[in-house]
Image 1: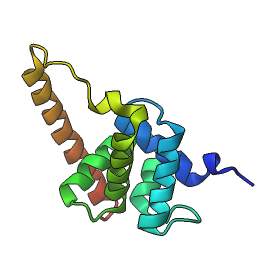
Image 2 (image 1 turned 120 degrees about the horizontal axis):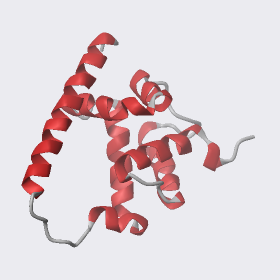
Image 3 (image 1 turned 60 degrees about the vertical axis):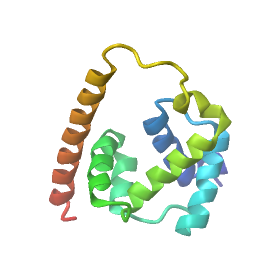
Length: 137
């Protein structure tokens, strides 16, 4: 029997945590995500089958594209709701305070970097929407 740390929901939590935090999420964040999935998505026994969540889990490199695409479609997609749950759990965790509260002043060139990130996000969303269309969604 697998331990809770090795459950499919825990692996999903680690994947989404790494995507959002750019580092391995703390065990407390993983545990809170698993509990949140059980409460919000009725996944006490394991993750529901959803094509986008399954694709993101099997192919983590597609997660930014899928995230961009479902962000355009709204919060009705299960993948988006799970990303938002992980974001809320991580942001509330003292273990990852630095990821959200840097405390430094913007450096010169920040506006340019923000513009580049916005363009990259738009490109990812466009590619992700194309991928969703190819999946028939």
